[in-house]
Image (cartoon, rainbow, N blue to C red; front, side):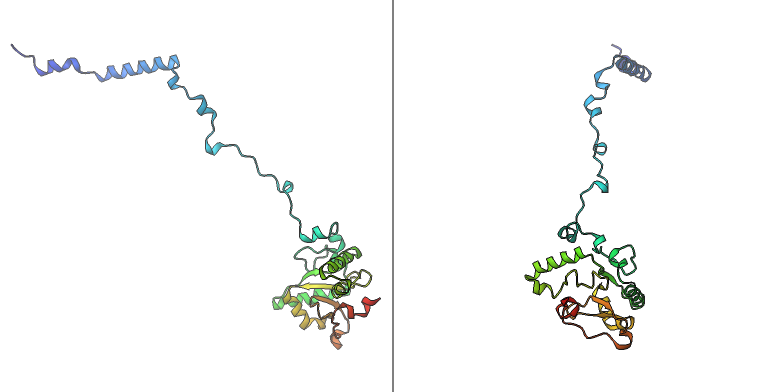
Length: 229
């Protein structure tokens, strides 16, 4: 028996590439036309946003956020800058702050001249307290009584509203320590003097101090004749 040549045996099992490509294309067209569910995007996946597209509520504007209150605002009730309460960082040049603007004009002028010269030594003045309203002074006295336990002890630190030089605009409390040290050494040249030994921050104007030096300090305000009125 004569066998057919190899090419004759295998030709019946071969697929021709053009025919295969054509069949695949026809099947794909039929599936798309019929809308086969395997080719449709899942409704769940389309509705679920990715991690980067998640919805977030915007942060509230600063004006709507809760504000913290400084301790002095809480303890002093309605008292504010109009009464002489001093914000942080106030200097002797801040005319818009009543505690500074309501100081005696000559005292303020001396303070500004001294502050300008002190900058040459790398020293900056801040105003911790200046002019005060009578209401503010009374509140400070009440706080001092509560802190020190008696009116007699409180009087060593806080005068009454009728006798305090702060209410008259004749006194200023200066900080920080470098500034008070500078004024203790150089203040007399400007007429600026410490008045009470227990209050190194408290300065008043003594116009003759440039010639005579600052007067002897009182131990505390209770020794000052002005507080005994």
